[in-house]
Amino acid sequence: MKNGFKIIDSDMHIMEPLDLWEKYIDPRYKERAPRPLRVPTRGDLNLLMVDGKEPRQNSPTLAHDVRMISGKRNSTRGDVIDFARKQNFNAKSQLEAMDIEGIDVAVLFPTACLHIMTMPDMDPLLAEAICRAYNDWLHDFCQENPKRLYGAALLPPHDVSLAVREAKRAREKLGFVSAFLRATPLPGQTWFSVYWEPLWAQLEETGMTVGFHECTNSGHYPHLERFGMGNRLLRHICTHVTGQMVTMVDMIVGGVLERFPQLKVGFLECNCGWAPSWLQRMDRHWSQLGKNDAPLLTMKPSEYFKRQCVIGCEGDEADVGFVVQQIGADNLVFSSDYPHSDSDFPKATQEFMHQEMPTDSRRKILWDNCAKFYGIEG
Image (tube, rainbow, N blue to C red):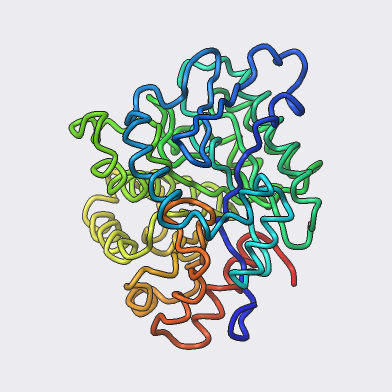
C-alpha cells in the first residue's frame, strides 16, 4: 500500500534462475532444453541457447545490449536491486521489492522468456515443453505467497492446439490468471486469423485473460529492419508501441472481440499516451470503410476496447492524466516494470502519485481495474 492506496502491479517481471530448465523440463526434452549461460558483461541477464541457437540471433547484438542494459544496471542503479541480486532474484526478494514499492499484489511476467518463443522454426513439442517447465517453476515461485503473487502463463505459439492445452493446464492446475503472448506474432501469423480462435475460446470459457507484451531483443518486425541490427535505441523506441498498435487493430478491427465478447485483453508495457488518438483513428476509419471491410463489427472499435481491454501505464508517463481526460480511467492499469533496466524502481509508485488526476481515477488505475481484469479479490 502507498499513500493509502492498495496497488496491483499488472506487469511485474521475474528473473529466471539458471537451473530452471534442468529442474523443471520434461526429461524427454532435457538434452534440447534451453541452456542459460552466465555472461559477466551482461549484468543480471544471461545468454539463453535453444537447440544451439540464441533466440535473438537476428536482433541487435549482445554488444549493444551490454552498452544499454548491463552498463546502466551495473553503474546507475545496481545498488537499488542488490538486495534481490544477492538472493538470486528469488521469491522472497520479489516480495521484498513489492514492499519497497508499496505494491500489494503482482502479476508476474518473464524476462528471458519474453523472447524465447519467437524462434519460428522451433519444434512445437519442444516449445510446449519449455512453456510447461517455465509455468511449473513460476507456480512454485508464487507459492511463497499465493495471495500476493500471481502467474501469467507462457504459451507456445507454434501450434494453437498446444497453446490451448497449456492454457487449460495453467488455468485449471496452476491457477494462473493470465496467458502471455508477444504482441508481434510469428512470421505469417495474424491474431485475427481463424487459426487462433480455439485459443480465444479457451481463454474466454475459463475467464483467463491474455496479456500482450513486447520485447526489443527478438521478434518479427519487418518495419524495423531499416534500422539494422546494431542500433538498439532506434528499435527500442518503436517495438513496444508499434507492435501493440498493430495487435490492437488485429484484435478489435479484425473482429476477435466481436466473436469473443467475454475475452479480456491487456496491452502491457507499451505506454498509454497513444491510445486515445489510436482509438479515434480506428473509429474514424471504421465509420468510413467498415461497411465493406469490417461488416461484422457491431460497435465502434473504441467501444470494444472499453468493454474488454486494458492498457498499461507506468509512473513516469507524463500524459497519464491526459489519457484519463480523453478516454476515462476504467481501462488503465499500473505497472512498475521491476526489475528491468528502464524501470523506475523503487520510485515508480511514488512517481504515479504525482500524476494529476481525480482520487477515484487513481484508485481505479492502481487497484480496481486490474483486480477486475485479472479476477483478483482483496
